Amino acid sequence: MDDCEYEVRISDPGEVAASLPHLLGFRPEESVVIIGLGGPSGGRVGLTVRADIPPPRHAAPLATALARGVVTDEPAAVLIVVVSEASDEPGFPSGPDLPHRGLVHALVGTLAAEDIPVRDVLLVRRGRWWSYDCPHPCCDPAAGTLLPEGVSELEVASVATGQVVAQSREELEARLDSLDRVDRETVRAACLAMAGARSARAQEAGWGVVEREAWRAIEQAVHQRRADALVAAPSLRPTELAEIVWGLLNSTLRDRALGLALGNDAAAAEALWTECTRRAPFQLAAAPATLLAVSAWLRGDGAMANVALERALDSDEGYGLAQLLRGALGACMHPAELRAMVATTLDRLDDVRPAG
Image (cartoon, rainbow, N blue to C red):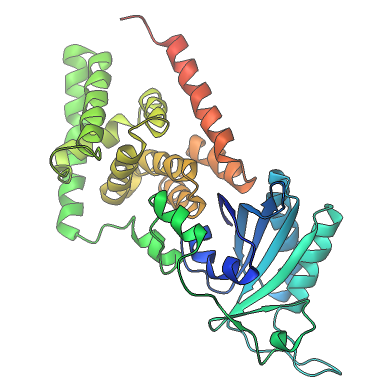
């Protein structure tokens, strides 16, 4: 299940339907999306949750899971959007009916049981949209309304946050895949060598020195990726990347790195975590992928946060922080709550960090 949040007002259902890629971060296919609505006028687009359209027998469990997620944002109402290229279903006695009516019924009933009004239920298909509840000829199965063209307020908002819409969720996943076989082998060798070098350095100067050197490597890499840097940051050399990913195995350094998502270096840190996740050996990807998930989540990109957390747990299924965040994301924790949680973690680090 993917989620994200934008605080943008949209009054036209067709505009919402056309804006789904910017709400989710990718162009959904065969999906059901629930969009929370709030604000004084009830037109603010809030928390959005998405899932693949399930087989009919799984409609009720999915409806329960989606409702459990969206209710955490306490919406005034919701809009349901079904994205599907499925053909019309036989309907009696009135003729063909829009597809996935059983799923729609399960969703509406489950949300009603949670006292969440459903503003409308839309189908998006072949560049058009329909309302499941509309009695007018424009919503006949063979008709539909063309999706609006032009730049919406939501698209402007997504560009402002730096979001780049992917053509599919698979494309989001591919952004974290290294396609350079030579680089993968070189980085793997550097990481193997770094393990021995770190141990030797610790025996010589102590683990405290090793940790401080690893943190300086992280700070330097982030500094190089700042928007105001005079020169575009080059890719990390294999030894540089190895020092950073090995350093992040230290939970104290990793938690300290979480704080980079809260300040002016958030974008630079996210660029660093993306590169480390993409290029690190799979067994060492859990920490940078988890940091990437936090960075993406805090700027409202729930889709990338989900993809990054999946990468972290694929790397290490027992990785505690990723498991914790996966549960919080599944419960649709608000980005502001995550920000507060990271700030609390940093406060604890300050309390235990030795003076000097």
